[in-house]
Image (cartoon, rainbow, N blue to C red; front, side, top):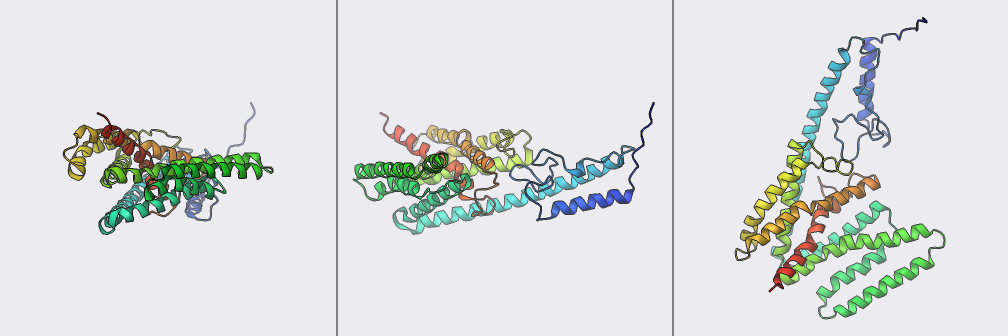
Length: 362
């Protein structure tokens, strides 16, 4: 047979130097996003060896010359994996502290707005500000341009009838006129790029419906049932999100949708559902009214537990499609306004429509 030249065994100093170089490269902030050893975006922790492009970290794969006896590389890899796990745990606890603190500060601010402003004007102003930020973040993530007209259309349609009561028919006519005007402008200016024009038109109105229209149900709820029916479901959503995050970090092993949001697990999801449904009756009796049938509170808790989280999954889909980690940085530990309110937007319409149906059922 023909003998092949053997691969020379690399020295220990070479191996140590190479690992030191790779660690320095990983810690550098100058790496491009598509680098095989660049930091991951949402869904992958620091301890993971799987990279965005599907390759493995160089530290997790040892050279043939490094492991001739099968011991040195394995020991080194085990030690580095242990260090990575500890770093991930510390980072998770730090993120939990920041999320908790920002949630407490936000709730304190909302309570202050309700207590010190007449007729919920402070809360209404906060909702308007949130609507603008929500719409801006979504359209920016999706690369939608020229969306200001759609924002104005749906804001006047959703808000003005509550401030100028008795003229709803007039505002419906104005809304239709603004949409028709948008169609005319879109068609006349679409000669250069038909696809982009259609995408911007459809995307801007869908984004407005998902943010401005959905959140406008808070105004309807306050007008008919009182602001407590805005605060109570919001607290349930916050509780559900916090418990899911905590139990997912501590015990999560089975992702619900790995390709969409790998950090959200069945363990966190089900633990949050139990806690939210159990708390819904207690909070409802204490905050809202003990005269309302407790079954109604449990139904709201069940919706918050099993349906509202899909608002978060939808937000994760948008982020995955856009290639971003968060919608913004306005809320420490959470990201943007959409990152904080995605599940709230799924809850606001349901609460009003459910209460309206129950109140008008003989």
